[in-house]
Length: 311
Image (tube, rainbow, N blue to C red; front, side, top):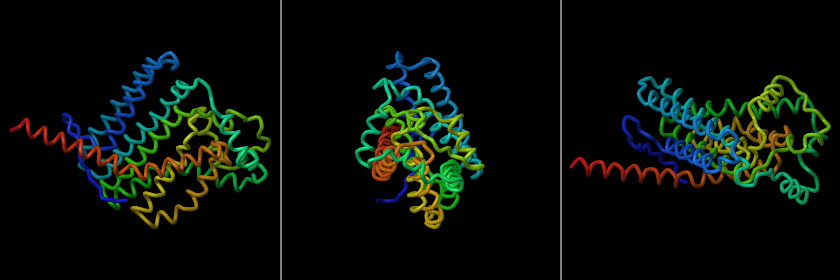
């Protein structure tokens, strides 16, 4: 796959939108449209639509000030903060929309398939291997992902330049969008929500285990499982490390490989969720260049029309 990068921007007033920005705004508009169309199935739909608008304005403000910053560090910080904020917000907003199509969770179909394939339920079967050191390491790999997201993009930005960082941000954004759509198309509550009482061995650990459980309790919601965003985004980051900073790819490999296991061991996901998450990342890797080419052509058409109106 070609790694040639472009940085074509769509000019709208005083704002210059890149492909990542287009992805953000189209996604936000789409979930707002779904919120309105399926309002009978969305609790507090009016407030959610207003929050979507507010989140969009915050994102545009970060974009505006970031574009006008002359300092490289500040420009990256505003760019990264804006993108992280908006995709985190969209993920939380989609929580309210998960049951608009089926109006029920589909865990039993996943459990039946995994039972037929493995003969056991993997998340329950793994209980025999639970230990404090293993639990702590796997929670570390799961939580450390949150640090790697901005850290890897920052490394690419300062080592390879702004266009390479945009490649990372766009691909991670596309990964998030695919996962969010998956939550709507195949809503699954997740292991703890669906069969939490079947677990008989506690996940005891230390600092990272505490952080992982804190995030589960205070930031994560029921559902949001297929595809696994952790597995999808982590795979995209791993591939980006291979593309732009090969030594990081090898250094981080044990963490990324452990992360895949952690999603099931730590009872965040079924095996199916994680496998589909990796598949979603590979899909992103395959289609991201074509998506960016579509954006580039749209920008070029706008530039031609703009020049035509000037002549």
